[in-house]
Image 1 (cartoon, rainbow, N blue to C red):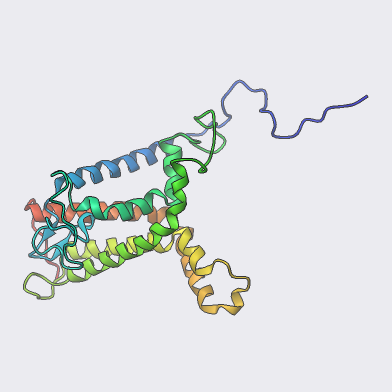
Image 2 (cartoon, rainbow, N blue to C red):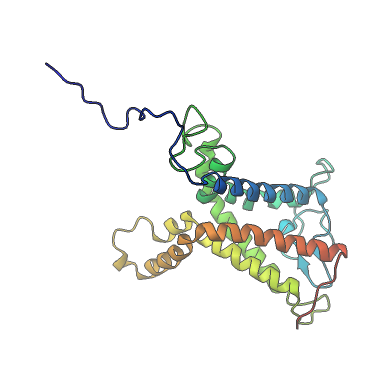
Length: 270
């Protein structure tokens, strides 16, 4: 006489409900969806505005257009790398922001935290822990187009360059058009945005692996170990900095937009 032993996990428990969670599990993916959707809507609108991104009186450059690398950039806004890209052969709706946003956009889109966020909120895959996947088949990130998520570490290097440029922009925001030192509300906003961007970028999982990965003995690499511990502190709150930096870049960009458009006047603090 033989007996059949069922392997644990092979079959689902015989219950009529899709899951047994009784809390408001749907609230987190809903709020995530609204937050990410709001950012995408703003970014899309900003891409096509193609104007009001440089305020010469205060030396404010909007993050979405920094660095401005096209020949069509507003005079004075290409202060860092010049204007190497000629957009005259492209459709008229192509703006300078579409060139540079590929880099930070690619970094965020392939970020480990953001993957979890939009997988759960947009694709319902799965929407929450202990809640069934919204799709019948799961293939992970092994097929097109999700296989391209593996380029995240390369976008990290580009994000470091973007962070450096935004830091430079925050620096020149301390000097007005005449070259005199001043601190305005916009200066503070641009500085805080640069700090948030760096905290998010350096807390990236790829950065943590770069500074401390492939080491057998930390004791033999004290500098890399120290860097790894510092990055780990940021990595621990990577989700927090991901959201803070996303909102800070929108606030900084919108503020420069409004000042440049003359909607309101920048307040001088010092």
